[in-house]
Amino acid sequence: MTAATRGVEAPGRAEVGARTLRTDRWWLPPAATTVGLLIFVVYATVRAFQQQYFFADERYLTPFYSPCVSLGCASEPGSAHFGMFLPDHPLLPYAAISLPFLLAFRLTCYYYRKAYYRSFWLAPAACAVPEPHATYTGETRFPLILQNVHRYVFYIAVIVSVINTYDAIVAFRHPTDGFVVGIGNLVLLVNVVLLWCYTLSCHSCRHVMGGRLAHFSKHPVRYRIWTWISALNTRHATFAWITLGTLVATDLYVLLVASGTITDLRLVG
Image (cartoon, rainbow, N blue to C red; front, top):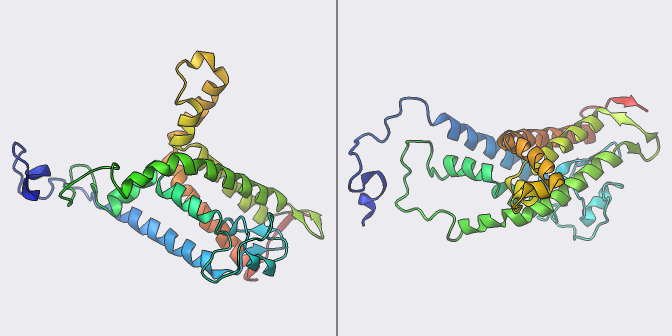
């Protein structure tokens, strides 16, 4: 079967001359997704390799640099909560130990797959809009078969979320002023709560908790947790986008405070 006889042009299919019969602006969602993801990728890439303004007020560590484990973290005393053991290099992000796994977790996320399949690969761009590809093998061949690592990198994403939680908690203590609460604390706290919502609403998390249970009645605790996760799962796409925004907002706040552009307002202490 040639490429011209596949898909919508295959024998037995209705002969429609138009590329699509849709009259609405079907291209807006994939276009908006493309713009949104590109903005985040560009910003995150620039900040990851900027290697400055990542630690503010001797306690605020941006999530883009957590955990800060490069020898370059020594430039900001107190930022390396778990030690420094990676070499300092301009092409090596300070949080190089976690960024690859977080990137893999996001890229293989079921929602993000749908998002960039439709927006970047046009597979398909929208319902009732033919995709331009002659063949389709799904996620059964390289490179898309690598999407199956999602269930494994999920566990690492949980560990990173724990680390981000630790960063948010220790930020309440200033090295000289003791316990303090500033606007930055609220920013970090809101970000980490939403990151947990995104991580725990993951389909893999839902499967880990109840996917293999044959009888829910025999596992009441796991069943109850599974129902909570299932409720979060219905908003997984929402949390996916919200956390992109809170990550940028949190990092931008730390950058502005660290660079002296704004001053962190203290509410307590």
